[in-house]
Length: 490
Ligand code: ADP
Ligand code: GLC
Image 1 (cartoon, rainbow, N blue to C red):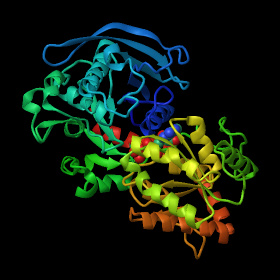
Image 2 (cartoon, rainbow, N blue to C red; image 1 turned 180 degrees about the horizontal axis):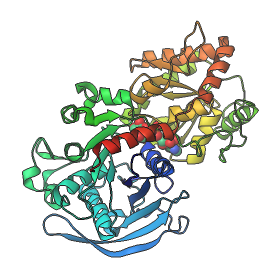
Image 3 (cartoon, rainbow, N blue to C red; image 1 turned 90 degrees about the vertical axis):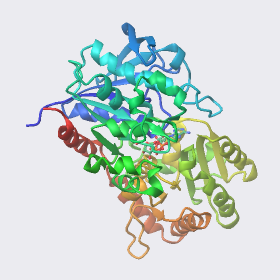
Image 4 (cartoon, rainbow, N blue to C red; image 1 turned 60 degrees about the horizontal axis):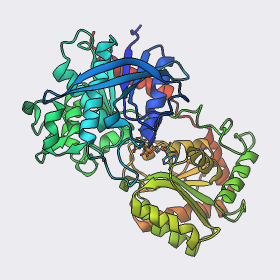
């Protein structure tokens, strides 16, 4: 039997404490699933001001903690602690100058904080310092995306002979290759990573710093969150300049599909819904649809198909392509749209104005609302994701579970999880298209809507099929476990 591992998960967001996107869902769910398999797991997060101390019963654990950075700088911080509902310890690094802010990466105008290089270099170092101070003898240090990409580097460069961490192996999961942590070289001294590592193979890029590239170099294992995206990122087209570093990892760069936390996302027991439902009785879904229509001031009519969107407004998501399609669809079809999201200011303004332009037909909420995200998943008939690239995508998985047919671009995790509808046989779980163009998206939405009106039996069968599918964490965790064992020191 394989031995149980001690896994330290280090990340910049995690459900339920702080979330901007799917990263938080994954960091919340993966430890739970690993613990279920008998491993010891803990999570280390920054202590942002928005994290509710009393709600999560967070108390001080270790203070003061001194953390050496470069340029002979010592930072002082405190460590707070709580436990998840499943008994996973969660440590929060408290450092007010860096983290007493409401949002993790940027201000309310969506502008990145100017000290992100220092904030997350410090956090990555502090996470390792905590392990050393508290004798957390990790087998696996598991970091996520650029904010914690320096964990593998500090581990290899600074702590290779520490009695607590020398045996650990490091894993870096890439959830979003669009964000690499690019900074001017004037930030490098603070990191303390040493100018000998400021090379084009490790941290240097166009004379600036690239955190993700350094993380890829130093990590023992790098993965992304779907098999197709792992293949795509090895190419020039979607590698965003990381294709060479990723290819140089050989088989130690792979795709492991995310799972879904079905305790949070199941229509049978979703507390955010006005009515519950399952494949046995879909009456509740009709109630959710009516509630969604009402909430967004749309005409309450079960016959009109609703297309839902819940998304970060970022270039990745293709919402700039969807925008003209909504106008065109309003001219040509009987169809409703509901959009929930925030991010890019220009897109926010465009989507905010839509309900006035198409009263009773298009609704939007600009902002972040988890209850609304659940209501959109449940109340919509279709869910659209015209992503330019999509490492995994969780919303299409939620949609399948909620009987809401995904209309998605065939890329990354979307291609791995949605099966194309076959008009002859009725098979499939959604509608896929290849080209990211207004025409292709419009035609695919048109195809879905004509299927809705003309082949309702096919729609019904697809809904059932999608709802019965499971993308459980257990399956994904078994793959993580296998790879952890391949890199762990004996
Ligand atoms: P990404 O991580 O790239 O944003 P995913 O599909 O993996 O994409 O995950 C997005 C997650 O964030 C989902 O759980 C989705 O419901 C949630 N989400 C995104 N935008 C919002 C929003 N405005 N309000 C509520 N939830 C949101
Ligand atoms: C990212 C990706 C998304 C993925 C999520 C969780 O933000 O954009 O595709 O599902 O991380 O891994």
